[in-house]
Amino acid sequence: MGDRQLFIGNLCNVPIETLRTYCEKYGKITDLSLNRDKDNNIYHCFAFVTFQIPNCTTEFMSKRPHFINGEEIFVKRALPRLTASIPERLVVTNRLVLSNSTKYDKETLRRYFKKLGYIKKFNYEKGFIDYKDYDDVDRILLARPHYVQGKEIFVTKFIPTEESDTDTSNEQSDRLTFINEDENLKIKYKYLEKQFEEYKQAKEKEINNLRKELQHTKEELCDITQIKLDKLIKNQQLFHQQLLFHLNPNSDLIHTQMCEDFLRSTSNKKRKTTPTTSLIENEYEYLT
Image (tube, rainbow, N blue to C red; front, side, top):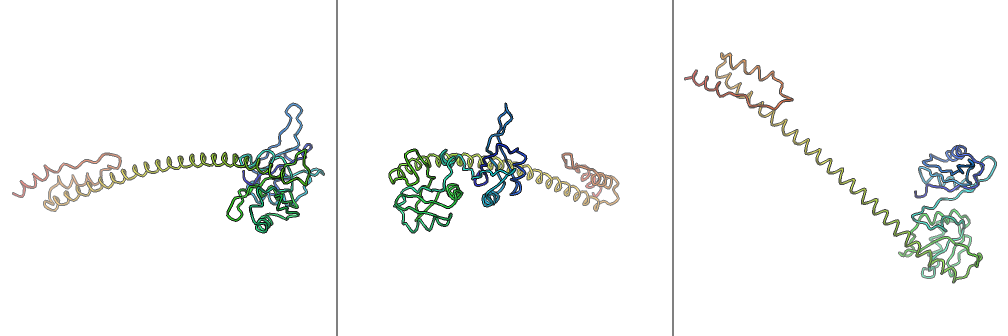
């Protein structure tokens, strides 16, 4: 899905067509799902909207806040299941957690992540960055993997727990990053596995298409060869008949045979060599 899908909440009183009309102001929609309670015919309070191009998603997020029927709706980028864990998809936070941040140069880290959003606070030792907008954190997770100083750095969202507050300890931060690092590896493996299967299927389809094209080319070459062979035989027949006609221009039998061969249509029939043995024998007797 990439960066084309949005999660929209607070839609309990918004019909699907109203939502569609509102979202289409920002670009073409390829999919919109708004679940409803089938028994009571009541809308659930969230939906997923997929745009045709990522620029529409970015524009939609840049125009916050959004209001439909006088009520503000909640909007965030939808993280794909293949590359994001369940907590990453559910939690909304402006805090980004960096795994093993002290292994990297502090200023290099700051410069790299500063390009990805406005930083309010950067704690190098504890390994977290507070951005001004929660959307910056989602965009950074969508853009994974990230490389600093030629090495990949694992990033995830800050996942709050009952024992922690916003000033989480370094020990807890390390525990969270290790857990998320392991999850990221598993997710990455599944993602690569799926990519390999898609690549394999695409190549098999490509090979089958090439085989069909090769067979078609062979058939065309056979047809072209047969046509040229038929034409060559026809030219040889006409040449021999013209030669006999020049040798004996008064022969009605030869003239009649030439006209018949010239006017005969043989495009859909197998061509046969015109028997000229008897004609040659007659000419030989005439000349002698």
